[in-house]
Image (cartoon, rainbow, N blue to C red):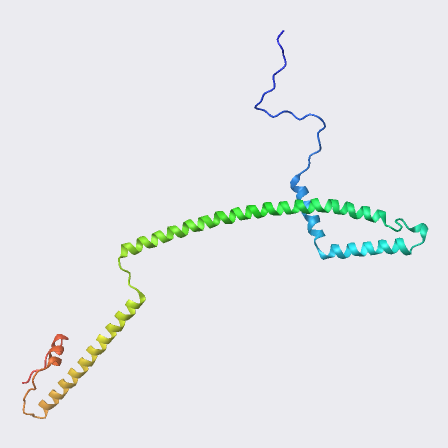
Length: 205
């Protein structure tokens, strides 16, 4: 007769045997442990704990003998403090582990953002280099200032030449009106500038 039992499969986990332990929400327990650790790390906890221990010592030292519940050597207080320390240390470690997990997630997010910013910066640098190559030689601020200064000097010189030519033309017109001898002065480069500026050259009648 063939064996009807199924052979155990190696691709599936073995079913747990024995007593099943109760399950709890690790997230809720973690928040609870963080709250306790955060409370134990405050000055209020230290002050309240100091007050309780001082009252404990005072009552078990000064109270009548039949009212003392933990006489000297304070064995019960030692047990309470030991239990508190034995539970406080794992709770603090659990809170630190949760904080470390949050820090790791934040670090990964910062690294991802830094990588994206680096990629964006490299892209912008490539685009700027491409624009500079397309534009050729880019005029600098000093070059523009020098060119503007030279242009301003040329405009000032041209304005001065025009003023001298207008003054000479007015002087010649005044001499004609007063009946001068009509002799023309030899033309100089100012007269040529006057003609090149687009205004008619002064001629004698």
